[in-house]
Structures are given as structure tokens and as C-alpha cells.
Figure 1 (cartoon, rainbow, N blue to C red):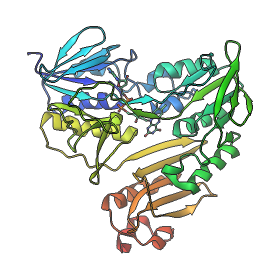
Figure 2 (cartoon, rainbow, N blue to C red):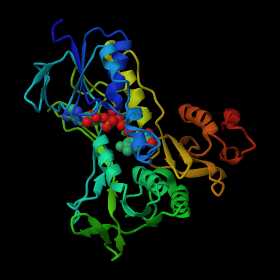
Figure 3 (cartoon, protein in one colour):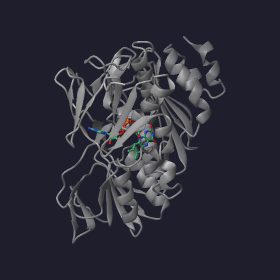
Figure 4 (cartoon, helix red, strand yellow):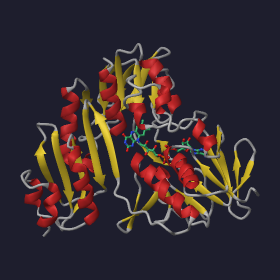
Length: 409
Ligand SMILES: Cc1cc2nc3c(=O)[nH]c(=O)nc-3n(C[C@H](O)[C@H](O)[C@H](O)COP(=O)(O)OP(=O)(O)OC[C@H]3O[C@@H](n4cnc5c(N)ncnc54)[C@H](O)[C@@H]3O)c2cc1C
């Protein structure tokens, strides 16, 4: 078999692993090379801020697949290999170690890059970001003897870590620049709910402030804020978001909020595909970018099918993510950067509610579900249908969501 009969997948994260597996299971008979710059066997990321950091599961249960699977499926897994360049004419990629690989088709599944902050004293020990397993291991070892931790950023990762560290008996202070964390995603009411949830569970949440300095001898001992607060801490975790990782570039490769792909996962360069966090993809006619586990899995599976049989399966997917904090389970369906009104179903006080985000035509664009998993399926359907709905019926818990179709207006 010539090396040209090869599919190279760059990134063995959630997308890369699912793509490799789907290619093989879908009947692809060429060589599959799955490479990652990380040296760890491919692992899952969501547990790192949840059950792994709290010690409820061990390292092996975080692996995406049993290591034997790669050999069984004849997937050539290359770890500790960083792709640096693409040549689309010779159809090769170069790696940092000086090797070059030929490909018939190439998938970019490079995920996200952490946003970082530059703060005086950030070279002290005990200051972490969380993206990779190596980060998680270092953090876990360090926090074993920590009493107070500061988390910078009240996004989902910061909020989950606040919950997990509190569960471990650590006194957590979150410092967040915004007045209402994640308001642009969940709206004011749900943002206030999050603030309250954390405070009720012993987390000190400081808003409208930012950390400007860390003090300490060798390890961090306090965080100083712009408003002059001095917060004692022996650990700091910075969670200020991520951006699509498009470091592997090519002059013809269109990048706009991620590698721009069409509904088949094709980039602007023939035979180069992309999937997962590193992409922007068409949703209801406009390109969007999400950083969700479920998208990474489903996108990769669909794109792999199109790599086997070009333009055979368009990707029509309703974005979905979940989060777990202080014993509550949250789910979010759809995608809404703006909305005209929100409709609350259930009661925020009871922790059990669904908040809908509607456009000016009363079409549900997105929904946030708190501890109401039974609503997940009808909500997903509602968003897929994109039909106007009676907001009063939506708010009325005596009208079953699955019957809401009859209340379309
Ligand atoms: C701590 C944590 C908790 C999360 N919790 C949730 C959750 O509860 N719910 C949810 O929906 N989502 C969650 N997410 C997000 C979810 O994990 C991501 O959306 C998902 O990992 C994206 O998968 P991916 O394959 O696109 O990218 P990744 O999983 O990031 O994989 C990309 C891979 O590409 C590799 N790579 C990058 N560049 C190169 C290169 N040049 N050469 C070789 N390899 C390269 C990287 O090393 C990495 O392994 C969480 C993320 C984190 C970090």
C-alpha cells in the first residue's frame, strides 16, 4: 500500500479518536495515522474538572479507548508528535521532529488553545491552567495540601472547578471581571442563579474585579486584585476561556473563528477536512463555533463519513453541552448569541427549571435546563423544528413539552 493511500488525523482528542474509529468502522481500508503532540494515551477532558479532580475516578477510566483498540482497528497512533506544516501540493505534513508524512486525505482536529493572562508573579508555583491531562495531574498533586484557592474566571470550567475543589474541603474564591458571569450565554436570570448557587455552597464569588498580582516566596501565597483585595491562597487556577487552535496553517486554508468548513467538514483546501473545537461550521445557514464535547464527537463521525464518500452526509446538528456543579446537572441546547425574550418554565428557587431563549418570531433558539433531563429530548426537537411557539404555553408546566407542537403559532 502506498503512503498516498493514507489518512492523517492531526489531534488525537475527542474528535480525532472518533474520526479514526469511524473511518475504520465505515470501511476505510487505507492507512490511518492518528497523531497528537500530547504523550498521554488519548483521554477525555470533561472529567478533569469534575470526577477526576475529586478522585471519584482514576486515570485509566479517563482514557477515551482501551489502548488495545488502536492496534485492533489498525490505527497507527503516534504520540508526542507535533504537526507543524502542510504542503497541499505534495500532500504531506511535516512534524516538529523533522519527519514528513504523505496523505491522501487530512483531517485537522487540533481542538482549542487556552487563553492566558500575564499577571505579575505568575511564575510562582501553584498557578495552573486546565486543558491537558498533564495540567490536571500537576494541579491534583498540588491541591492535596491546599486550604484556600483562587479561581480566575467564572466560566464553565472555573465554575466546575470551584464546585470540585469545594467538595474537597478547599475554601474557594472566584474572581470574575463581569458583573454577571456567562450572561452572554445564559442571560441575567440564570447568571444570578449561578452566583447564588456558588455562594450557597460556600464559594466566595467576587465580581467586577480582576487579579493584578500574585505574591509569595516560591509558591503563591496571595492574590491581589485591582480593587485592592488581598486574598490568601496556596493555589490559583486560571480559567479565562479558549480559542480555536488553528496554529497548523496553510495560505489557502480559510480561518474565521476556527478552520472554516462546509456542511461536509471540507475546508477551503481540497482533501483537507476539519472537525471539533478547531472549526467554524454552518448552523442554520450561518457559521458558528462551539467548544462542546458532543459536537466534537458527532462532527468527527459525520466528517469521517464524508472523507470515505465525499459530500454524502451533511452535518445537521443541534449544539449541546452539559455541566455539573454542586450536585446539579445543567444542559444547554442550541445556539443563541442574542434573543428577544426568555421564558422560564419551572422555578429557579427549586433548582429545577428550563429557561428558553426565543427570537422575535417566538422561535426557540436555545434552552438551558437545570436538573430536568426529561426535557432534553423535546427541547432538542423544538430547536430543530424552528417553528414559532406560544410563550405562555411554554411557561405553563401543565402543558407537556412534547405536546407543544400542537401549540405552534
Ligand atoms: C477540563 C475540561 C472540562 C470540560 N467539560 C466539558 C463538559 O462538561 N461538557 C462539554 O460539552 N464540553 C466540555 N469540555 C470541552 C470538550 O472537552 C471539548 O469541546 C472537546 O475536548 C473538543 O474535542 P476536540 O477533539 O475538538 O479537541 P481536543 O479534545 O482539545 O483535542 C485536540 C487534540 O489535538 C492535539 N493537537 C493540537 N495541535 C496539534 C498539532 N499541531 N500536532 C499534533 N497534535 C495537536 C492536542 O494535543 C489535543 O489532544 C471540557 C473541556 C475541558 C478542558
